[in-house]
Image (cartoon, rainbow, N blue to C red; front, side):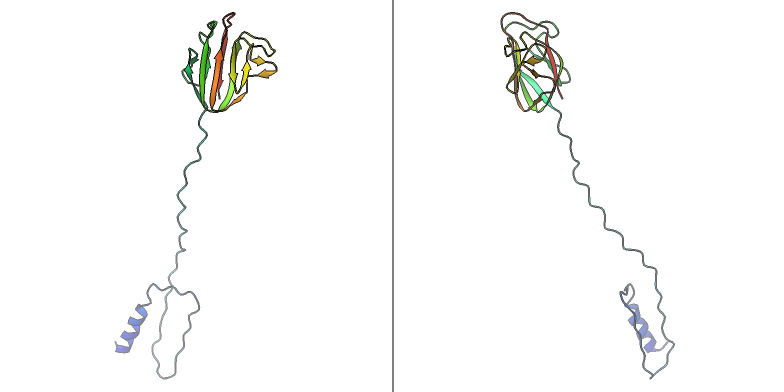
Length: 173
C-alpha cells in the first residue's frame, strides 16, 4: 500500500459518523489517475421523538361536603353525611338546641322534616340555614329546605318548650 493511499484512508476515516446534510461535490485534476473512492451510505434511523413530558398532577375532584355537630345532642350518622335532630325518629326534646358547623359547602337533602311551626313566618321549632328558618315539613313561608345550597358556616337547630314533633334528618351532598 502506498503512503498516499494510507493518508487518504486515514483522512476519510475521520468522516466516520458524519451525516451529510447537503450535496456531495467531488472534482479531480488531470495530474494523476488512481483507483478512485467508494462511499457507502447506511440507512439512517429517524431521530426519535423527544420523550413525552411527565404528566402533571391529576385534577382532583372537589372534596366531599362535610359538617359536624359542635354543640348539642343532634346526631351525626356513621358516614358523617347525614345529621338528625335529638332522639330522631322519636320526638326531639323541649328547649333543644344544636349547632352544626359546615366545613365544606354542599346541598341539603331532606330525608324527613317534621317540626312545630306553620307555613307562615312563625316557626316555633326551627332549623336555620343560610339565615333562613325552616319548620313544619321543610317550609317556612314558601321556602323549601330540600335542595338549599349551604356554604361554610353554622346551621342552628332550636325547639321551644311546648309541642315536640318527630324531628328531622338531613344530609349534605
